[in-house]
Structure formats: C-alpha cells, structure tokens
Length: 264
Image (cartoon, rainbow, N blue to C red; front, side):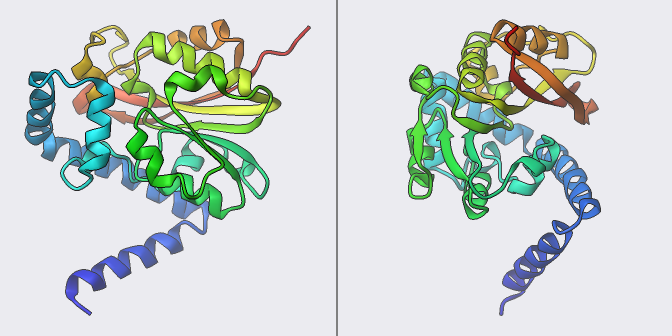
C-alpha cells in the first residue's frame, strides 16, 4: 500500500467512525466549514480565472455547470463533496430519512448525498440544472428533473426535498419558482429543507444577479427576504438557524425547513 492510499484509507475510517455519533457529526460539520473557508482563500486566483474565462466565452450558467460536471478534476471545487450525513444534519432532517421516504434531492454535486439516500432505502428523485450531473446518478434514482420541468413535478408526492449549496447560485426569479413548485409537490406533512447564503453586514442586495455572480454562488439573501419568498410560494417557515459564518467573505449560511401552508 502506498503512503497516499494509506492516508486515504485512514481518512475514510476516521470519517466513518465520527459519523456514527452526534458529537462526531458535529465535529465533521465544523471541519467542513473550516475546510471550505480555507479552500476558498487558497483557490481565489484560480477560481477567478475560471470565471473570467467563462465570462469571456459568453458561457451561460447552464453551460458552465455542464462543464464543471464534465471536467470534474479541474473544476472540482465548484461541486460539493459533502457526505449525506453532513448535509442532513445541518438541515435538521436526519430523523425524516429512512426506508420508503420519497425524497427530491436538488443539486446533485458529486452524487454522494443522492447515493447515500438511495442506500438508506429512500425513493429518490433528483433535480439539477446540468444534464451531465443528472446522467451521473441516473442509474440509482427513480426520476431526474431539469429546472425547465419544475411545473411537471407531481403534486403531494415528496416527504422531503433537500437543497444544499444551490440557492446562492440562483436568481430571485428562479428561486421563487423553485420554492413554489417544490412546496406544491410536498405531502401535507412534507418538508423542504434548504440552505442559503446571507450577508453578515445585513445588506442582502450588495451583489447584482450577473451570470458571474450566479456561477460563483455569490447571491446572498436575508432571512426576511427568504421568508417572504416562502410565504408568496404557498409555504410556511417552520424552522431556521444559522449554520456557518465566513467573516472574510462577509457571508454566512442559513438552513430553513419549509412546509405547505395549512388550509383554513
């Protein structure tokens, strides 16, 4: 065994051990936040160069994500490699996941969360802007959906919908539509668990919705703005908390749980 493969095996073993307990999962989440922050600092120049190249080529947001998924090695930073347990814990939905749970997983990243849900016996649908990303996990899910097909999502179907590291890449118009259609597709007691970015200084309109900002995931919204989106989409906010802060970027992350409005 080479030194590199030994280190890789050790990391996997340690991670598997930590994921068995709430304390261990909490430690992993804190490390993920630290690692993400450090990676952002170290990769700023390369990432900016990638975005500038994309903008010069007049690449659309959809084309950008297809390229990210096609060239996984070079653009790996842009694809979340979070494990399912990390995502579910931060979104407060671990207790909702189990055999037979019907889940809509939004934004497949490297596929870890999607496959993790399948391994736990969930009936999984996947939604992503990139056909390349959807092809990667199409062998294990019930159905795949593109944003253009949101209106075709079946109503009253999902026990759970999950969106992690996606909303900050979306325009207000697209996020409004997504929330509306996903809320409609939830069962009466279903939950839409979503992470989004906010501005630490309180100015959630400090960055314009340019293609470059959407690609970079720079779109930030206040909790009040997202609450308004949820209400207008026919949903209600049932839980929220801050899950990370990045002072060097004047940004942080919120997690929210959304349910359908109760009919009077």
